[in-house]
Length: 247
Image (cartoon, rainbow, N blue to C red; front, side):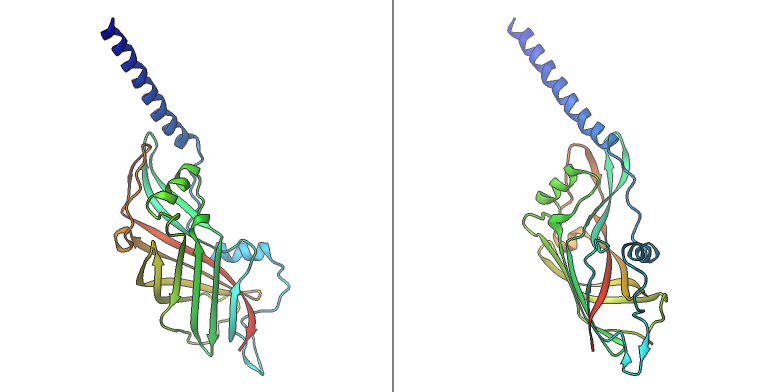
């Protein structure tokens, strides 16, 4: 009789385990997994034009006073700016999938002096990162990025970005931002490729950088429904600036 009870108990435990694993797999299967596309300059420009009135003066114009770009620029508070990640996962019963998380809790400023961007400061609140999965977002508070312990990521420009000339309205400008990235409590020198455009009084900037987790002391997250995670991920940003003062 005791042996039979043990067999029954063992069977119940196995069933519970199978149901739990199946529920996890079903969760990932049923949640929409169309990852947001990578940030592009064209999409960013379209988003700001949709969000703001287009009857503002051009930021790319010059006048008798000189370069209208000179001065301080800060983020537009309309939800069009974000910082985020893209990481490839392998999920149980689903296969490979690109996990995308983004936060709009970002503060940033840049300073232009002549034809040079002399200062850029970006600070992102990583506790605001959201993806298509609340489970993933919760895990990142305790694993990988460990946002409970390291809630903020920052970037500070270390060398000026010099332009050849004042860009025309709608012209795409490509540059590399050399600076210091602090992530997961670790600061490293990085070079972030950027694309930028002036449109209707705004400076729109997008960029991305492949991040090796080991460089920032980040351990790959683990989960019953996640079979594997790559050891690197893409940091991406979309920033929309508005001039607050002229030089």
